[in-house]
Length: 168
Image (cartoon, rainbow, N blue to C red; front, top):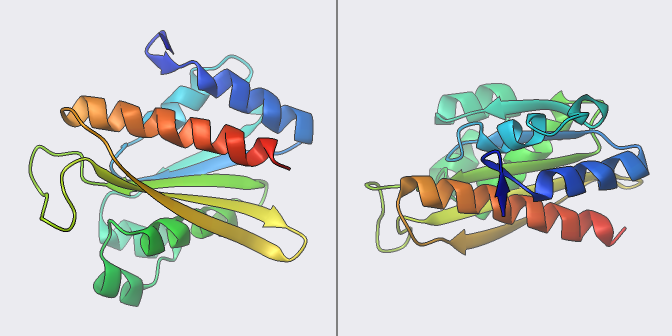
């Protein structure tokens, strides 16, 4: 499913965005720029890719994406609540974008806990709508090593974005 180490879904997502006249942006923690790289590896991506944030630290999430400190303290960086705030923060910062994805998780090999195991990744999806920004979140637990978890996260994010945009 990989072409030139980039997910094959990126061109499909790009075409959906072009068809709607939308721009895309993302915020990444555990994927560390892999999602943005998949987008920009796609020829013509400047037509639909606006920007990407790599906000690995909590301070970066707060500073660049306006994630609420209280959210981080109550739910942690790896939570659906944080993922939704990250995605909404992307659209707040990226005024040209209509759709955003965020990723935050535990890629390992260390850092897991019984409640948040290695491989757990939370995804945020945000879309501009007539009533404002609509957000949703999903959590998946991926198997494998750090590289496999990060690549599986990008593929899941792209597939989910295709499904969500395809609904509208």
